[in-house]
Length: 291
Ligand code: ATP
Image (cartoon, rainbow, N blue to C red; front, side, top):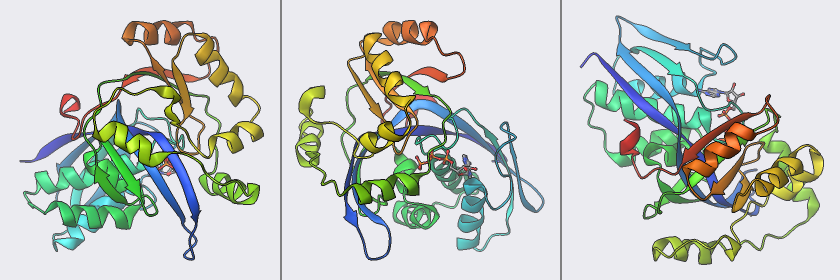
C-alpha cells in the first residue's frame, strides 16, 4: 500500500463535568464524547524520507506544531522506522472551536500509519501513543460514543446511540480553553451534572430525554463573558431545535433537531452569514460511513 485516506470526525460533548483541579494542574473531568459526521480527511502517502505536511487551511501550522505531524513522528519512532510520509489535511472542522479538530487529525494519522505501514500495533499501544499527544486523542482513535474521565484521556467505550440529527454553529470567536477552566475554578461553582444517570441512559439504550440534565459546566461561564453567544443558543431554539449545548470550551454550539430537513432549514435560513453553519449527525464507533 502506498497511500491511504482516513476520515477524522469532529467530536461534541453531550456532557462536560468538571470534578476539580488536580495537583498536577489538570482538571479532573467526566465527559460524554460523541463523534459527528463533520470530518477532516487525512491523506497519507509513503515518501523517500522526511515528514511533509500540507493542508487546505493556510492558517494551520505545517511543522511540529501541527498535532498530526507529531502523531506521525511518535508512531514511526515507536517502531524504529524512518520518518518518511506525506500528510495532507483537508480541513473542514473549524479550528479552535471545541470540536477537537487537532486531536482527531492526530488520531487519524496514528490509525492511518498503522494501516499504511502494516504495523499491526495493538490498540493499547495506539491508546498510549494517543494519550501522549493530548487528552482528547485517545477518544478520537475509535470515536462513536464514549465516556472519558481522568484528564479526559481514559476512555470507556459506550454503546452507539441512535442517530441524532444536528446543526453545528460556530461564530468564529476564539475561546481559550485554559481561560474557561480558570474562570470556572474562580467561580467556586460545584458541578451537579448527573453524569452517572446519563451514562445509564446510554448503557441501557433508553431514549434520550433532553430534560435529564445533559449539560456543559463551562457553558454558563462562557455565555456570561461573550455576549454574542447567548443569542446563538436562543436563535437555534427559536428556529425549532429540541436542545442546544456548547461543545467543549466553545464557541461552537450543537443543536439537536427533528430530522435532516429541519436541520437544512435552519442552516439555509441562518441570518448571520459570517457564522460557520452546517448540518451533521452522530456517527458510530469507527465511523464506517465516513470511510
Ligand atoms: P479541543 O476541542 O480539543 O479543545 P479545539 O477544537 O478547541 O480542541 P483545535 O481545532 O484542535 O481546537 O485547535 C487548537 C489549536 O491547535 C489551534 O491553535 C491550531 O493552530 C493548533 N493545531 C495544531 N494542529 C492542528 C490540526 N491538525 N488541526 C487544527 N488545529 C491544529
